[in-house]
Length: 324
Ligand code: UFG
Image (cartoon, rainbow, N blue to C red; front, side):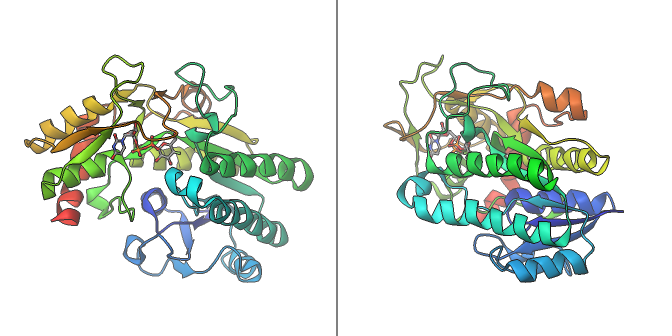
């Protein structure tokens, strides 16, 4: 089986993807600096603690482990923080990625799956959003991902580095059977914050009720982390089979409002979600829903989790332990 290097494999989506790669028999090497990831999210013997900026060490690891392809998750992901500390985001997400690509070029590794984001589309003119929609990020985080996508287009042309860019919509849920969970510090994502409110009794805030949506709250495309992980598997298979560079949206294709998420959380937990209503959060588009036809038709990907209650139920056991 091919040898895959996973950067950021101790993080949320990374660890779920590593779990699925191992289940399918791939040989997996995880590279993580543990700045936001967790040592215990990676199965024994796979983790190499190393910075992306240590090009020589990364090159040696690629050669020593005979790596065939890389899945690159390692990056900072908080949109709000990226607007306050843009230098930190451009340095880590852009320069860190270029350092990795340099090591890959030196080691002769020419296949990459890259974690991109729906944030590359900014405020889309219409939804569902196809990959051909205008690229116009409205925050520094989204811009870092656009910049890396552009670097990758040049590296394909100039170095023969083939890449699949996966533009994630709202990752959520967990794989309790794999002992995995979402553990961002601080937590900023909606579903874990609602589950936290249920456990602690401390109210969470709903950001904005005056959006031009049927119930006034923002609509997002919530995609289960295992379905996202599967998108990485089909992307790797595409590259290993000689497939060309592509960008794909990864979402279910249907949107849920914040109020609908609240109802799903209350149904799954059987308890009310303590909450209050606050102003809009800066930079939040009203509606982000993926058109994922390209990923479905070209790579045969289909999401298994299609209802929000199933997604929330998968996260509930680990969130109970986390906030108790
Ligand atoms: N929300 C609240 N209260 C909260 C947190 C979130 O009402 O306490 C709302 C947000 O306003 C938004 C929705 O819940 O409408 C989802 O918010 P999240 O923070 O969970 O997720 P985002 O849609 O902001 O961000 C996600 C990813 C980003 C990615 C972005 C793409 O986490 O990495 O989608 O648009 F950039």
